[in-house]
View 1 (cartoon, rainbow, N blue to C red):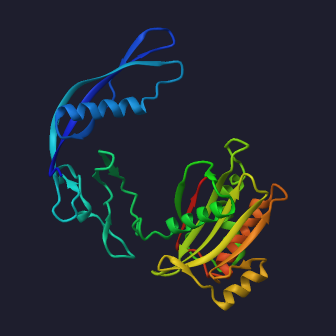
View 2 (view 1 turned 135 degrees about the vertical axis):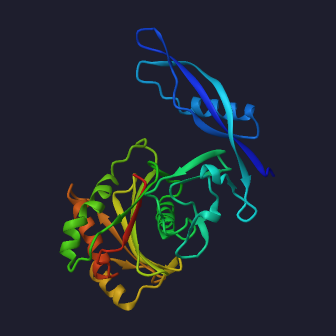
View 3 (view 1 turned 45 degrees about the vertical axis):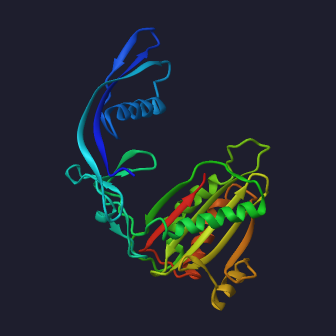
Length: 315
């Protein structure tokens, strides 16, 4: 296992042929590349540029050439976390990272720094506005999305994602006093992805699925969620609501089960979730279900805004 790697600045040119048939040479901004030696750095830079080369419409790339390479620093493996670092270039390891609010470990890289990812061999920059409070192992949104896909596969074995996965976070500002205010202010956060659930892009004969999930943390150990699953070969959309305690499904209270039953949900045999099949009858279904989901979060799980609401979707 290597204990040191070199950082190189590689300059290169891209030759493209325009619609007029004439050759044009571009000199993009140089980027840093990590390698055991200059030859490896040149090969990695060339491979990266070729992979992500996107000439304008009507243009064609004729050649990519690395014209200069210079060593600008050295990465050294940290004896504590085993990641590489070069403090003089603000390339930091996890020892200088953020501590997870839930598990208490240093598992997130610090904003306004860079880090070296050994799996893809690249340097990555963390922007100033990215400051997560939970690491990937403790983030309940990942568990909720995994649950959504487990539901999809259980309903339709062999189902595949229709599109790629996205995640976002929204802080709903100051607390609200009524469910009507919550729905009126933030219904669009739910209705827009819900409206896209049924806009499948895959082949008509293939079984594909789209999911949408939202959750908030009630306290350090308990999270409430609502998720939706749409499958291209099924006429209904499944909605599930529930709680996680220490990242595993928790049994609903008697009051929560009663409230969900009154809203048309069926309580699972384990008592850990309420489920409802939604029949899509018209174009306004997304707005209605967005309002219903926010009302459940408000009435059943006590969400009043003021806390971070996380959403994730494959749409």
